Length: 268
Length: 320
Image 1 (cartoon, rainbow over the protein chains, first blue to last red):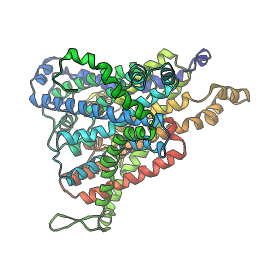
Image 2 (cartoon, rainbow over the protein chains, first blue to last red):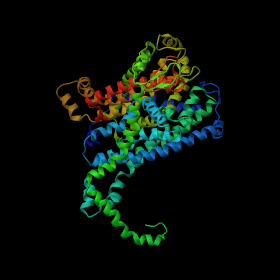
Image 3 (cartoon, each protein chain N blue to C red):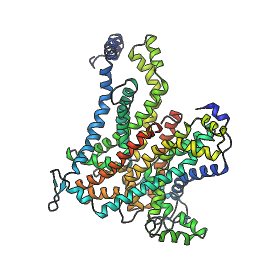
Image 4 (cartoon, rainbow over the protein chains, first blue to last red):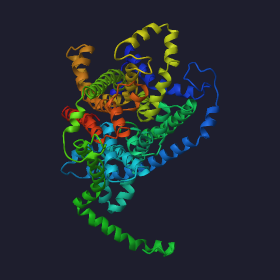
């Protein structure tokens, strides 16, 4: 951001570099260990070092219908919740960016609330309200919960992009004779397109991974995080859980990478 | 336009159709408040009806009570449920959870600072991008998987104990585990283990706001401090740290709130002493005492409301 600052950057003290390295290792070594355990031959305990290595568990995991069911449900929920969040988040960001109105500051606060409040609060609130409305718990109630806390992710991304683009391009487009539709199609949409994509992918990752609110709104449905949680407490075949964990790590890493590329870092 | 019209015709309809859309667009362009209502309506209705509505409903339910004989909810406003909440056992739960949240928050702040400082002050643009991604990846990646990883690591036959054995430190670990409160039969069933996992899963939420705050500290200010004779340590203490503080507060909103509301970590690594999340889950699940569960959540809601208002006055929202 500040290019002149880069020139005067000195070398960090050794202690600071070591501390940085330590924190980064702390954040990433545990993930690497899951990868190792996905190949262990030990199927009853978590013994280290693994007695042997095998790739058999990947085959076993692929043939487990409960894993597939949970995975597909999670993907469907994440897709619909992301679409809802995209629509609602973009609308809110557009409104906040282009107009000044009473309570504008409160909008960000309201949208952030589902992420800022403890998950159990949102979870049980939605659960008791949905139960009161006599709405059957299942797919759609999970989607409602997820969409609610995904909106802010899209909102933040789109609003940050609006602020970076500035109003002058839109004004220039109108001055040059474009009508509002053309301006939207050829100026606004290309400007926020990647922000939408990035926000959407982060919302997807967030929904795909959520468990606390989901536990309260899922009824008897089992999303992948709920499946994993049940394996945490009563494991059936530990290595299968390891394999699924590896799969989840890879699957969520992809949208995060892409979203980061699209926003070129730092708009979130 | 009727759907039966062939596609070729539709193209020639273009010029005629445009004015209609255009008229709508122009109509709206002249009425900014209508546009605002249309833009703001759907998200606002969603958040207010679905979310705030549920929260208010939850609050109301905490003033209902449960008939002790039939197990039915009595819909009369009363403070009886709050009286049930006020038992030593429940107060223990609040105290335990809030203490854990506070300790976790302070620890994440301490761990986050060096990395954030390095990123903001010393890292080249390239390295900064890499580090940024290295923090972002765990933040967004599956939280459950990350908790699960520690089950593997902390297990009695797992990797951490293996290292401790290799380093001949088993006695030190045993001593730690025998300590009251934080100890337990093994690392995978103890507050100590739970604490490590909480710090691990919420650390990225602290790093990013602190880094953003440090990034905004103008270099000229640091130079001015140095020019006026401050030693690097003094500059760090009296200039950098105070300016990074809003970032710490912003991060603490997440680390504190997430710890308060979590039940996954206590369930997978805890013992029989409950945390708020577990209590609420068991009250809604097995005991089916929704009023008491609602009253339970009012406490973290109150703590967080207090916290958020405080954070706002400290300017933490600019650092988010």
